[in-house]
Length: 193
Image 1 (cartoon, rainbow, N blue to C red):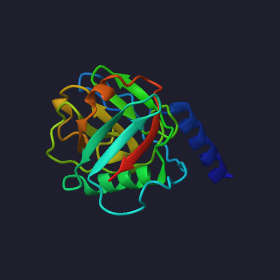
Image 2: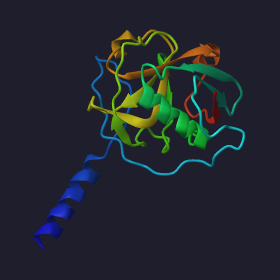
Image 3: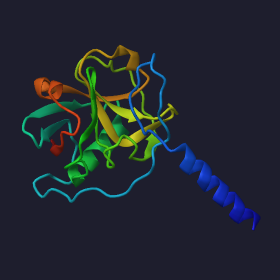
Image 4: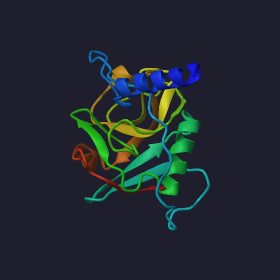
């Protein structure tokens, strides 16, 4: 009886607290983030994408047209790049939308499309600067953990993120496409090479 009461109380506390998910937050802005909720699922594997092998670039194609290329940095964030590549090759990101777009950032990769989805993985910090075009991984308030699927591109210098978020790549072409991403724009596919 006591265990049941404790479980009910815990469920009420969790449901009352809710969560705002993972997001990149400027230091002057209080972070309304919470621990990401684990999710399962993903889209079907694309037959045109190889299933294995080292990847150094990713081409993100949008459903509305246009694409941009990311130079991946497995030398600086090997586990992050491996996870991103695996998800891309499995088709996980296909059809997901950019749920957060501001003057300085475009963020997507949330399986729920709200900024609250994705699992938790250990953070992987490095010395890569968050200059225009840098690609990073979202996280909640606990700096020890990153989201396992949400990623972002900075649309202008964001040096306040340096060593605070995992940087795993840089947009090398198509930055004009990134600058035009709007909330709700969907990823058609991510091809890794």
